[in-house]
Amino acid sequence: MKPMFALESLNDNDNDDDGDDDDLMMVMMVMMMMMMLMMIIMMMLMMMVMMVMMIKPNRHVLL
Image (cartoon, one colour):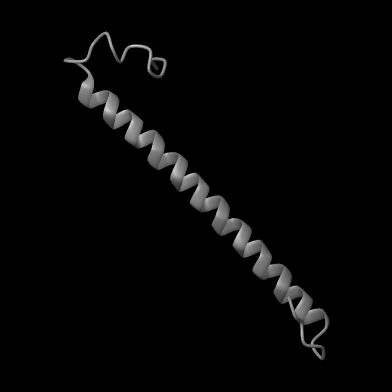
């Protein structure tokens, strides 16, 4: 793996497309990881709410 932004200015005409593709893939991977983390957090919150509603079914749970 080459270091990020190290060889950008040296080989502009050779690996310009490859560098852009690698950066785009890195950004997409980071965004996918963030989306997965947010989905996991939302699922955990919904599980906690369902557990509270199951434990106290007669009371109205107001968040």
